[in-house]
Figure 1 (tube, rainbow, N blue to C red):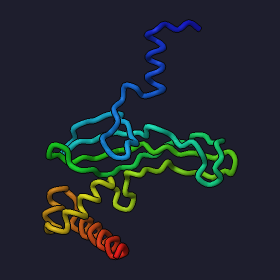
Figure 2 (figure 1 turned 90 degrees about the vertical axis):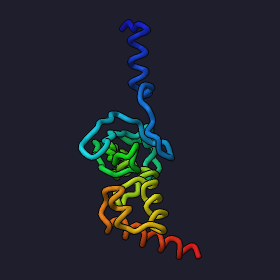
Figure 3 (figure 1 turned 60 degrees about the horizontal axis):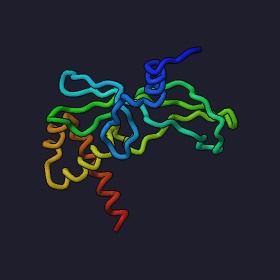
Figure 4 (figure 1 turned 180 degrees about the horizontal axis):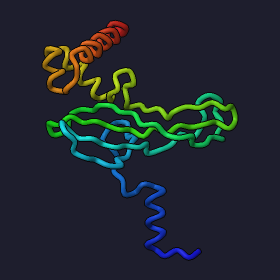
Length: 160
């Protein structure tokens, strides 16, 4: 097969996702697949920049991709608009031990279906603002704000 320079650049960019931007979150885990304006805010479709290399159960490198699932979470507002993230979560299967798992993220707070930075923002803001005001600002329920605050206070008490 003969490749010209243009063709090899396209193949290389597809493999390395060179044309995709990283989503601005720490740690830098995701690339932006698309961004669109939706009613009430912005919607990003993201996928992981890197894939798992080893099985978390047996530490084997003999793993294969085993489908995907989409996870819907919230992030901090951007330019005064609410931000929703649709993250494509890769599922894996270990050929060694047979276990399956979904790639984990360090920047997603699973319990509240939000980014860790949104959780941190809510936790700190709830020390000085009413829950209802924070909920209205972020278009979340006051119960979510209250629960995040309660958990944050529990974390602080454990550190004492």
